[in-house]
Length: 314
Image (cartoon, rainbow, N blue to C red; front, side, top):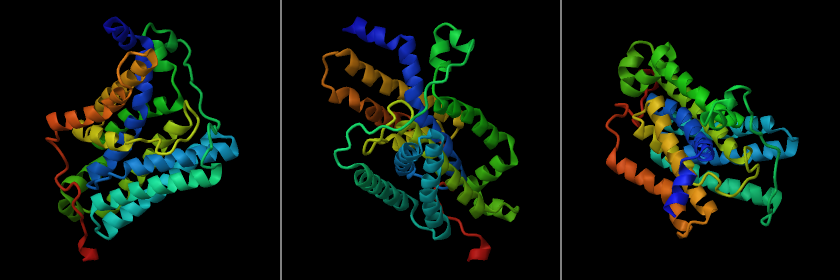
């Protein structure tokens, strides 16, 4: 059994699947980290991903074009982002409570819409999705070629976003304004940074990327929607941000770790290794709890989750 397990783990197929499984975590984390660094706690990533997954499926199903599905997912998730941003930034609502409400709403509305449109016993209703894109020459690289350069468009987008997000934060004025809004909003406001506007746009951006992350679940691979298809991935992406110390590179490393964990549990089931199937299913969630307990968050923006109102609003 040990040899079978090692054979599953140390393989190109496992590496490729781990990268694929990590993609929703990476995408959601790259969007969420912008909101978090601006000072707005966005635990609503889960609901935004779930909403994005349904609307991506619907857009692709009814138009026959998965690109339209992605655009539909972005718009739907941004609407939730707008609600979260307006409630937390303009009204000063509790950011955790607002996020919980968004997650509960998303779970209910996606189930209701899907059942209303496709029936309670919809079965395997599928929609057009994105196929894998093989990059010539690069896919011929031994071991890593197939794993890295034979993936779908969401995987490539995720790992393009990582360096772009890093450059945004640490090499541009926009990134400086975002970080200042999350660290010292009063000082930033005094220096002319429109803190509330920066935070508002940051939340909207994070919701748009969360929508794309949701689309990667429903129209890349299985090309179908299942109720609660996100299954806590938004919360795991949020944990990746914390474990990565609110740094894009660190968050990506954490996301890859969780992707490997998900890959292991699926391969254990597929190989028929004699363990209760519920145990492998728990792996990503157990790892989330253990990592948070062991590592915790030694860094967070000083004004993270703290409402800010400029003098003009008071």
